[in-house]
Length: 154
Image (cartoon, rainbow, N blue to C red; front, top):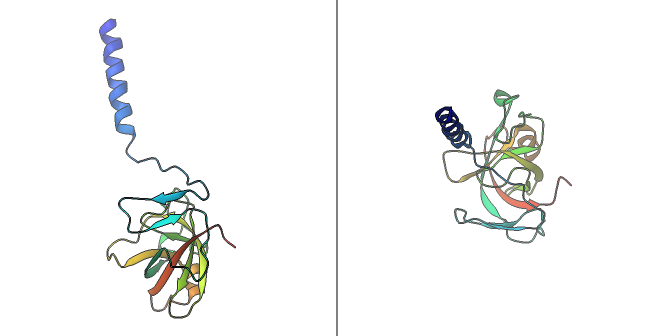
């Protein structure tokens, strides 16, 4: 009997060790300074930057739309191309980002719900189709943008 209990404990322990395949991402408290050793920028989560301040990141925005509608994003939500959401490689899920198109000055605010874009390192954010429509680059497919972490959707 003792052997079966010991064997059961070992098997249960082994099973628990394999269940943690995804790292836990804790929500970022408002105004907590985030710095990551694997990142080339730092930001203050939940804080807004004045428009004249340096952006948190500059690069190329792309967009994704109907082909991904209804699929689960990295944070578990279903993707809606009509929502103001985006994918970023490192920002915590739920972070609000102001995306400003450099050549026109137009901007939108999006919430990070997914991971990406993948491939070219100059691509820094994948926007939903709705956000890309408001910035006016759905036809071109890409646009040079500046990112600033902000408080919310205002």
